Image (cartoon, rainbow, N blue to C red):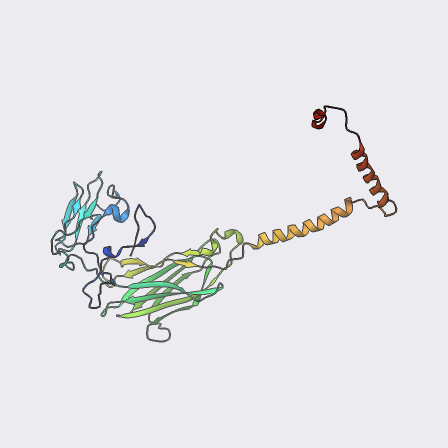
Length: 356
């Protein structure tokens, strides 16, 4: 577990005495800590979770529906802003809050005050509901030219099948091969046509419109389905690459809409869930090559221009037209001797003269 504080913003592992260990495991030891699955004794507030409290309720929402709900047992104390109203559900495992217009709202869940809170930790935590579907999406393949997308969909319900619409909005530089879309159940080879009910595909327009892919699927109970397809990566113009092109390009998350199994109900969907976003690596040119070309070209031009300029400007003289080398040396040597033999001008007496 990594923690950070205002004094030391660098994330560092928490000290050993601050770790929450699961001592109920038979292989627990003093030098090894196995983290617990829940943190029942932690206290928190809205400002700690979201960074700020709620200023006022949204005026566009239905006033009959409470804007804030909390799933905690009725035995837990919850502190609210003065003027807010608490509504506990009959099941005793959740409660909602009505906000007063014009005033801020803050919610604080303190630590349990009972001395045996650690013994009744399980009773103080609401067990989360099992979702109707688990989804995990990732890239497959290797190289800078082609790739693939794999989405793992798992239905945890052992008795009921789940039907949903899988929707992706992909950037135009990811060109999908529609004929490669297939769905297979884990442990069964080959493609299962009964899994994919309907496919809607709207191709992309370069630099104008993204690709839209919608797949309506039905997964049997207690099954894991792999939805895969291949795509091709486009080469961008050099002006379209960001400064951090080697980091990759963000691909939006896929949206999964769980359909309502009750056909007579007015609600079309139960809820939506989103997968994680992806980071696509496109073919990236070597942006240092222009600088190398500039340096090489400048050096070649400088050598060519310098030689040509030297030939055009330099004045060439024949050997017999120039002065004799020996005569010139004698003349220079004679001038030096004349300077040495030249008497000194009369002036102030030297130190030796004063002494005499």
